[in-house]
Amino acid sequence: MSRIGKNPITITEGVIITVEDGGKFGHKVVKVKGPKGELSEDIRKGIDIELSESELKVINKKDEDKYNRSLHGLYRTLINNMVEGVTEGFQKKLEIVGIGYKAIPKGEDLELYVGFSHPILVKAPEGIALSVEENVKITVSGINKRLVGEIAARIRKVKKPEPYKGKGIRYEGEVVKRKVGKAAATTEAT
Image (cartoon, rainbow, N blue to C red):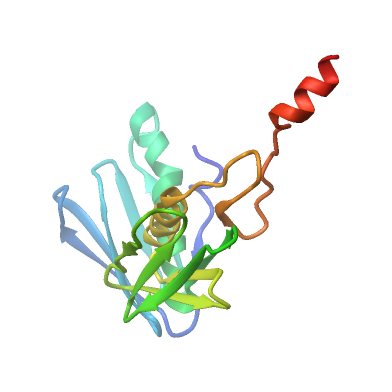
């Protein structure tokens, strides 16, 4: 049994969870509604959901099946992230480092100037908010943790930090391992 999967999820005040039959896998659908929005997750067969007034438990019906054991902790974490997302929300922060590099909001989307001959347009999907501070600090926020992380990774992928000068887009607090340039490398060798 999964150590993470056997922990119950406490339902905070203002959150409504419903479990219905059906969904993409034909078994169950968990819907979580809170003050910030609504999320849903399809549950595969072999995993069951036990719902009471104050907590939700994810139960592995087939303990011996390796595939279901792997899904047990995953679904517990996904549902817990949904509860956290509809109450508090998630956000990722990115920094742009480099002379002349900047980000400009264009409505709900974002336009990046990061050393290419043209600006790069990053479209914000539904449920994701992109904000910019001081033209170099980007905040990606939303209620879906998976989507927030994916959009932040896409923005970072536009211009990853390079190892010689450290220029590019990086997560806030990310340490870029710097390499020694050619000039310094030749002086060390002699």
